[in-house]
Length: 245
Image (cartoon, rainbow, N blue to C red; front, side, top):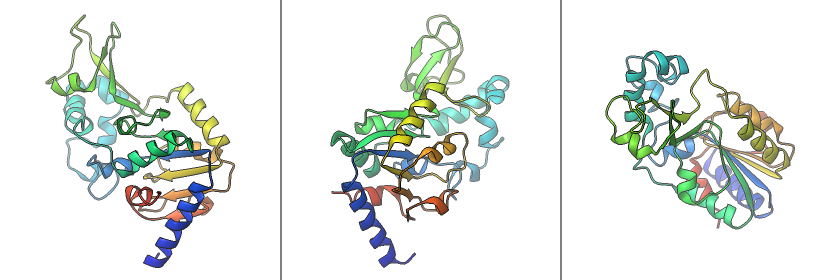
């Protein structure tokens, strides 16, 4: 896509947003890379960094149970990016929600940046690093407690193991979150998909519930939904979203 085509598509996207009042945003790791949080599959992503085990193995339920200390080394170093700030995409989405145009954000991210930007209706398919619970007494711990804790984090009340409220590989997604996401997407008049290659299921399968004719894909690489999209913009999500005035 040349520069003129790209600019024309962005202009068309901005017009679609202005003409819509029931927008749902479905986002992935690419939304947060502009805030300095690494994704998994890009050139600089976690899959292309060298670890003793592949990230997909480390972030599995089995690995958490059998190699808890190794899990927490990775989690502490790579998942707790607490200094990251919301970028232009997060801020614009919060602005659209406040204006009544955006009804929900459905995100695969666990970093809490949408809420930090001011968004209220955020459906976190894969949980959040900001919620951590003792597996024995269920006491809540925030992300800073986890960041400050060396080694395997234990509850300061009962000594139980603390587990992040994030969905690991081999674990199921929260049923209520899935149901709510499905309903929002089904009822949307515009669905914006940004910063995701749509390869992680069952989350990616949710976008197929969209029934409208304003399906926009904003992602630097190709996705499995390209053939179904009404508009494709191969550009950084923050750069595109900031064009909405």
